[in-house]
Length: 635
Image 1: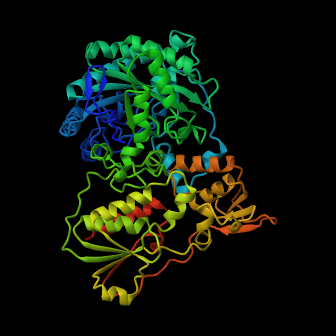
Image 2: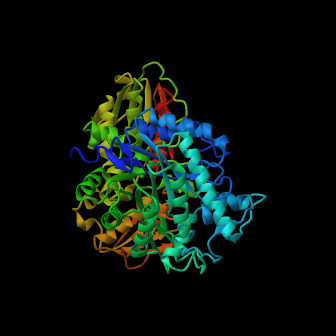
Image 3: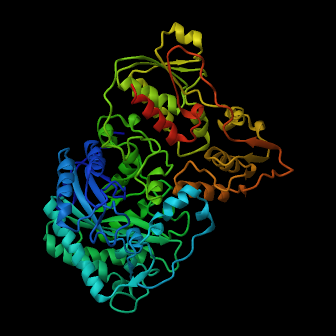
């Protein structure tokens, strides 16, 4: 596929984009503790601009900082002291040919920084929020501490204040003031955040807005705050400056929730008030564990495309579509007239160079997202953004050590850690051989791809990128002391993994044959992602499955939204979950213990040895790839 439409120029009002790929706006916690742009935040966006994105959307730019903000590190546009950093950000992005827009927001009930500093949250109505569902409690002690950090400080306090007319006039003025500053900083456009439970959306939602004054009641009245902001900002920036809003097409898990028909009315009114385009998103009740993946960060590919198409057809304005859209699906959506611009978030975290690789005809070298939700999961924990497959994500400003003298390195083990380390070492100028004792590359990842629909493509990328970098791959070669001596290796990177006896016997079954390996009634013992994924896979293949986990937290390797999604979907597939238990049903035909066994130790070797991956005791894809990156940077 040539991606002719995706790579062609796009238009949002008077703004022309070099292509139709936008970087999704998102919170990153990469700003400075005073709300200014520093090296980390600037480098994050510059990497995506350098990678070829047509539009960089700077997400969650606070209009009333420090109030109405989720974190002290939220980038703000509320004071002239923040202007130098914003100007730098604009210049850094534009230097690489991308356009840049600021997404302006007041976080409303999501303003965790207000809670941390004891300020009341500004809300449309006093309404007791629902309690979290049971699955939301599947978190570790460390994760609980991270999530609760804003509530634990000496000044913390939770309270709400129902917005008065004076408050809302102040809110409108804050958006106008921020817009004026965004124009002064040189931004090419402004996006108003009217979704995701933030203040403007809270007023449009029948769930959170129960007022009966001019700001509530009917759909039109609930939209009035949004419309007041649109009108005032449009008056400030002038008739031709690009202005649009991110707005939800529906709310899930809420009663009464916003539905598409009402959303179309709100969107139409906002377009009439001065918007040039609509960025179509969705929302779901955050106290439902799967709310994030049922709403604005969907797990189902292309989950919001049909809604974007409806908005575009009904309102006749340009539409930005988002929500787990592959380049192929994006090209088709543009061909179908479902959207005008495609916003990508997780895909551009995993590979900032995705647009350039598509333009170069190297779709096969785009590093795929593994949908493990470490990105948004880190924000849940009030941490900086991270990525399971891209160790540089969130670390773009960190200095990269200069390569040392060229060495001859043997990497033993062709799993993810070994492939990643081998590639990086070769890119740094070393002579690298990868020795895999088996007949194929991939290690446990090759098996996991058979059971996890979110993983296929990653192994191909890891192997292909290693070969492209100049790694010499040898299959069926064991790294014993004599072989290493004969090869005159100077360095051994040991990535041979650990034993997984149950998985090793399931290769044929996972590939679709050898059904007799697993009986009809199967018990899977384990708590890690591998155990949970295999349980769901077996259930979908018609087995009666019980998952037995002594731990009360399943799939701890995943970011919270991914964990909640996986556990929910596994149970929905028919798996009986015995959580916090050790009792295996008496009537099962097969018992599979799915967890790492013994680590495989490296041989005695006269040269330098580094141990990574399962052999070092790390668990999960992200830690393995991060360890590989750290070791490679030593040489």
